[in-house]
Image 1: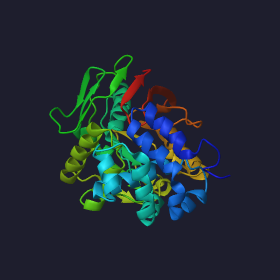
Image 2: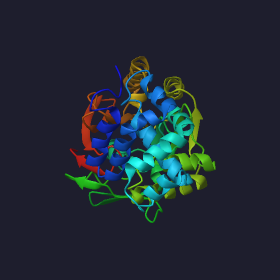
Image 3: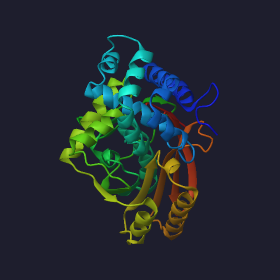
Length: 344
């Protein structure tokens, strides 16, 4: 089916979501992009021939980031001045970009999304606090789909979680999502090790990588961009440990390593499952369940999932802990972690 047929194409649907998330500028970029996509034949052909679900592949977000990247480079001038808020001619600016930068946009969109949103660390840490209250043990963290590994550094950030202070006081990365409901348990979280995996891990020491990450931040969310910049700077001082590889094979290798007594092994992922095929999703889930079956009171396992529901109606935070195997829906969250509706 034509991904842009009819009156409700993919970019327009995602524009509605962006507007609901408080980003009207991004919404207008996507709407103008859909209206004039035919001016960029290579980009249009890439989208039309894309295998699978365009929403799951986040094609609209890839397109928005490509346009933002161009504006940050100052080309074309009409687009740069739009992003500087010197005019509001979205149609004219997007036309200019699509005509002159078709090759750049198509190349950019072939690469996966790289948001690596550090605000999501608040939800992950809150889940660790729940597990910490239960087990009272230090954590070794295993992250699937680490990107640049910024959330592997979650212990280096400072948090306000519904009035509960957590993390490292005085950190340059301050995370305080809007909180609804009771606060999480005020339990200390000690991280004794953190490592992750990604098919294409990003090195924040590389300028092009830093630029790519910044371009995926919505242009009308300056606080989010500042927080990302601070997290990148911190990661350059504390480089996260990331392996280049596929999630399933890496996870199998990690879970084969004997778990030290007196540690809780915690597997977490945020906005990753949508990029895995059904077979890989099942394989990863089976590996975690098998490791959970081996867990004991002094070698417990926690699984933290921050993902869209299957119908993509909301983002849910789930915590499953072993040896009991109890699964809890802890919260419903903003996709980028701006708010948390805590269920506890």
